[in-house]
Image (cartoon, rainbow, N blue to C red):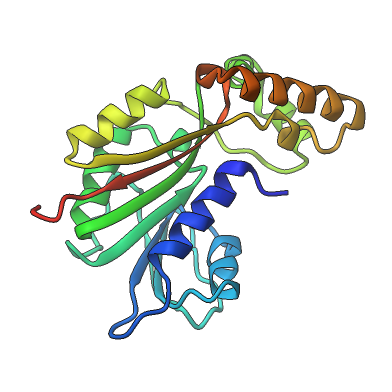
Length: 224
């Protein structure tokens, strides 16, 4: 099940990569791993693009839209040429990055003027992620049903994340908050029902600081 932030990320990229005359837009997937869910969904919706992939691990996949694969951290993209991409995205990556400020500067460097970076992230001030800091990785795996990497939340808050990207030169174009604790408790029917009620209450009360699911859009100025 996709989270609301993932769906908003896909919708935003789909608008940016809509079919048009001329060269295909260039897309960079930051922290790609081997997942192609985002790109395959975009292709299914009619988007046309070429894509490069970047991760600490081997991110090779067999897809016709894939052009290059880089093995390096988000905060040190030395192999990636400046101003190479029309858009970049990451799906639940930045919470795993120890130096988000450097990563923001690198993403800024590789985007063309006017380029856009779209990210889905957890909100560190949400209750579920405050609690998650005090639980071991094996417990996270038990809840999620798959291996979960170490999270650092070095941006500390969504406002802090926005500030880091603005310091790098970006403009925060959009910030959407959602509550989606239900998505993390899919394997536990009773807890899932309680989480759904909790999510609805937070959304109705517009308590953004407690909403754990966020999608952000940052744009590099045209004059950069």
